[in-house]
Amino acid sequence: MNKWAKLLTRMRTHIRTKIKFTAAIFTATLLTGLLAGSGAANAQQSNGYRPPEETIVPASNMRIRALPNEVLITIGYSGSTIHFYGVAPQGSDVIIKVSSSPEQAKLSKKGKMLGAFWMTVEQANVNNLPSFYAVLSSRDVARLLPEAKQVELGVDPGFKSFLSVATVQDAGGAAKQLTPDDAQEYILGLENVKEKEDLFQIRNGAVTVDGPDYLASLDLDAIIPLGDYEVTAYAVKNSQVIAQSSTSFTVKPVGATHWLASMAVDKPVIYGIMSVAVALAAGLGVGAVFKGGGGSH
Image (cartoon, rainbow, N blue to C red):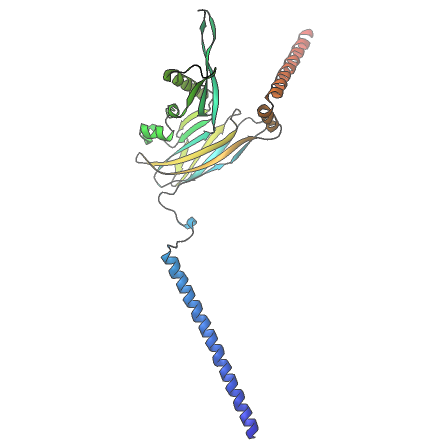
């Protein structure tokens, strides 16, 4: 009996030791986890931790999106509409500026030769002007911003900002230096051409503002230039720009249009021959139709 009693006592002692050890391990692990969590929280607070950005809407928040962000030009393309939407600080007006990449345009000046014949007397290249430019606003831009600020942002109704960025070179070579007045005449002439083709636009009242949300639409004609377009939205309040945001969209050819556009750039001689051939074929076709029609009467 004594032998079994001693064995039972040893077993009880061993079990109690195991229980105490396991409890100690569990307690230590729990305390370590709590202390680590507390330390991490303190570290986050000391490092300026804040919730995800999406949950924070500061007073100067401004966003803009373009829909669609790609305009695909096909053979049958006849125009499309692109929409701009976003949010702006409450109580502000919105101005949206749309600009394509800069281009070089060649212009000619006509004049009388020998006092009787109108001919090209001068040619010049105008550089650094966009091929497309539009300003959309919730109200008259002239009432929203001072003129100097309009010119600085490039949203002035008279496109005066172009006079400071555009450059003009004589197309006949560097031998002739254009005067500032002649250069300005070419720039203003190109602006006039672009406005007539609806490629330079100022549209007051084209942006609808409803609380923090705003929406605008821009019609793109069939002759819309290819390339990348930069879009900038300005929030205006008390004659000052208080926030701005940018996005972009692309106008690109696809299918046969892409093939023709690539050929015009990479193989202009072949493209020119094809264009002449198509024009001649079209002319012959029209002649045959009229000739056939005339013979039937």
